[in-house]
Amino acid sequence: MSIKKNIKEQQKQSIESHKVIVIHGPNLNMLGEREPDKYGTVTLSDINNGLVKLGEKLGLIVETFQSNHEGLIVDKIQETSKIYQGVIINPAAYTHTSIAIRDALLLLEVPIIEVHLSNIFKRENFRHKSMISDIATGTLCGFGHLGYYMALEAISNLLIK
Ligand code: DQA
Figure 1 (tube, helix red, strand yellow):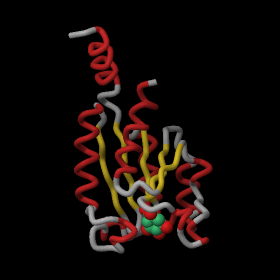
Figure 2 (cartoon, rainbow, N blue to C red):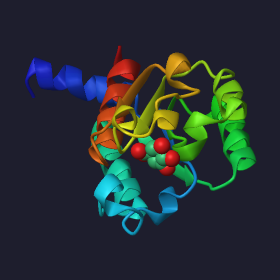
Figure 3 (cartoon, helix red, strand yellow):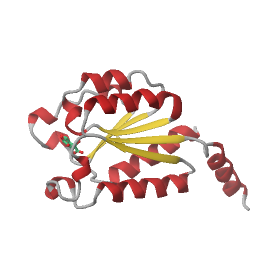
């Protein structure tokens, strides 16, 4: 094995136990059927399966969670601090309204990547405001489902450093 490959392998092993949670907010369970012109035709389970597979390649354990209920999302974020080393979150409509989700995320000391399938800045004015962008490590929007994979790559890079 070349030295470069060996170092990569060692890095992969050193983050092997890192767990990442991907949290999807309301109505994202309807992806595939829901406004495909804006959100695409890929389903949530396709995205989740793709994330788990990519996680395996990157040496990360990926778990996923979807809820239509703000309080359940807050509960999940509260659990996160003890279990996961990274968070990817698309709070969907709660992005624009939820101080509760923002406050829960403020409890965390791990990288948080905000993802939106659509480019929220190209849409209605009320979608331009995100309650979490200024506390997230980074935000990806407008890349459709690929944004989730980009977010996982980003977390992997942040955890390796
Ligand atoms: C969304 C954008 C939100 O404005 C909207 O309410 C969603 C999905 C996105 O992924 O583009 O439900 O978060």
